[in-house]
Image (cartoon, rainbow, N blue to C red; front, side, top):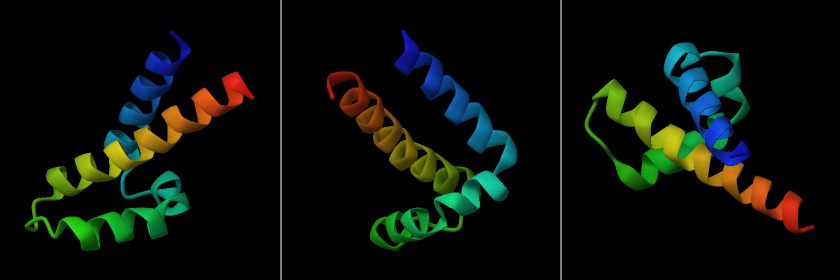
Length: 68
C-alpha cells in the first residue's frame, strides 16, 4: 500500500541522511521526543526513536488526507 511505501521511504531517508536537512525539518519534534525518552548516548537508538515519531505523523497525515 501507499502507507507501507511511505514508511520505507522515511526509514531509508532518516537512516541515510540523519543528521541532515531532512532531519532538521523535524528537529523540534525530535528533540522533544529525545527529552521524554532520555535514551543513553546510543546514536542508532536515538535515530530509531526519531524515525518512529516521524512515521507516526506520516501515517496520521496519510490517514487524515485519505478520509478527509
